[in-house]
Amino acid sequence: MATSSGRPETNRFRGRTAWARNLQSPLRAFLQTETGSAAVLLAAAIAALVWVNVDGSSYASVWSTQLSVQLGGAGIALDLRGWVNSGLMTFFFFVIGLEARREFDLGDLRERRRFALPVVAGAAGVVASVGIYLAFNAGHSSAHGWGAAMSTDTAFALGLLALVGPRFPDRLGAFMLTVVVADDVFAIVVIALVYSSSVHLVPALVAVAFLGGILFLRRLGIRVGLVYFALGVGVWVALLKSGIEPVVAGLVIGVLAYANPPPRPVLERATERFREFREQPTAELARAAAAQLRAATSPNERLQQLYHPWTSYLVVPLFALANAGIPISGGLLTRAFSSPITLGILFGYVIGKPIGIAGGTFVLTSLTRGRVRPPVGWAAVLGGGTIAGVGFTVSLLVATLAFHGVQLQEAKLGVLGAAFTASAITWLLFRATAYLPRAPRVRALLGTAEPVVDLYPEVDPERDHIRGPVDAPVSVVEYGDFECPYCGQAEPVLRQLLAGFADVRYVWRHLPLNDVHPHTQLAAEASEAADHQGAFWKMHDLLLDHQDALDPDDLMGYARRLGLDLDRFMEDIDTRAGASRVADDVDSADLSGVTGTPTFFINGRRHYGAYDIDTLSTAVRTAGARAVLAPR
Image 1 (cartoon, rainbow, N blue to C red):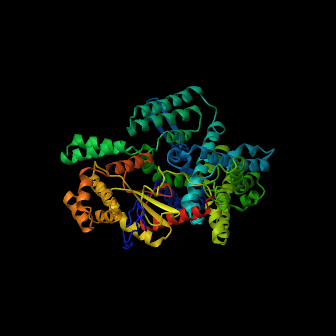
Image 2 (cartoon, one colour):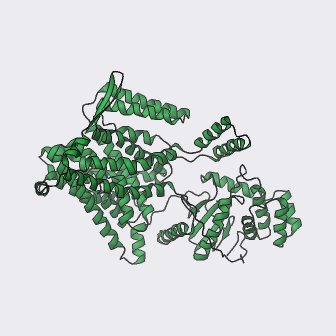
Image 3 (cartoon, rainbow, N blue to C red):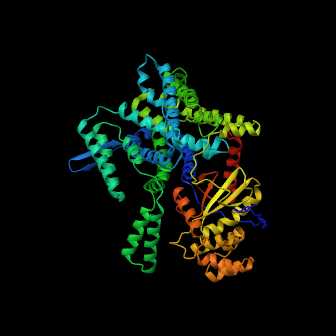
């Protein structure tokens, strides 16, 4: 072990912890919601099949029930299936728009050169699958239904991927998410331009005006949800009246909700408002504190937390229940084997999607000579292409717009068959990959692309406080606060991590939250005073072990216990000799987008999510595998 000054560290890393903070990253929460909802979606589809084959008349009767909303002399009348398909599904596309914006603001797409890959891969997948469908339907009237073989079901595909995919679901899930989001954007454009009825200009202009109002209010910084909801309803109604499929409104409005984390000054103001309320709990101060807390949370995150579970567990399964019902008969199955609609959708998804996504990715990687490459290995890219053959929700939506009667039943059968076949092929692919030797398997799944680096500046052995081998291939950087209780809870986890991995170096950087913790700045400067005498890590351990005792007398007691030169220690404290070093760490936190503690970076990539021993160990193993494969 070594300190930042190169002196050996003598204390051993021991200690166990049963603590695991239940903190989810946005991506992991998104994927886990999709995984759970996939089972609900599958159950709803099975229920629809059973219902329509047991009592087809009641199935048709329920979903053809007319419901109308009247306001004065104007109103909207749709059947129940129409309210689900055009109304509730707007919220589904709204969540897709939110996730697209989050990836653009916080995910891999924030490095704009990487934006081209999911767009090209998604477009190539669409072109290949549609091309195969048109090949089967050339010369037939059914050719106009090519949109039913186009788009991937984000929720169902990601949910099934988590069930049948490899042991690195987050990384592959993130790649697939960006691809299928681009895929869904193409689908929504096609729905608006191809499968909408004749467009009426005046209502379309009204929809544009409502969207302009949303943009104007967002620019003014107004964050009243009911106002935006009312404007969103206006957009939806105007699009419906214009003849444009109104689900377009959901995607457009979702993309407008930014996902950038709040700067530290905003969090400090929220703390101040809460402190004022704590001292004088009045209704007025409660409203001020609540408003400041809302301002400290991005609209994207708040809206995803509100709507994503509802769309995944209610809206999409309800859509499946309304649309997946097919009266199965021998005649239908016989026709399906020769139906260009069924075969076009089936082979378009099962063959076209993997060829298009993998082929588009390969072509772009080759043309850029590797400057743009997938964040996963080629087996994972191909597996992502095969699972993209699950086109359930959006495919059924387009099918209901493009077909009727027997043709609609044939299209639904092709969609269901493609979803089952694509899942089976994906399982077989990753099952085969698991039999490869470890090094080729890791390369096939993880690839060699450099991840986006969030940490600035990078770790400097001449400057940073380092615990563990200085030249270790994996770096775990923590921005911490000696008075932060979560940092104290994380400390035994980090000791256990270092005890279990010999190739990891741990770096501490200061981020004293002075607006919350009154003693943290002095504690940070005391640790730097101890570092001047080669005892940073010993002082670090004592401070985190005694977070409730950080007064000046306590700090002198710790210095005395460590055998430091007390006069020199006191002089460093009095002259604030370590203040500039602490300030440099705070500046680096701001440059790295850190606003709270503890925040971790693993090989320069911000770690979003829990920091229990299992989660951190998995992240470290993945980073280590990528470090070994990285080109030198």
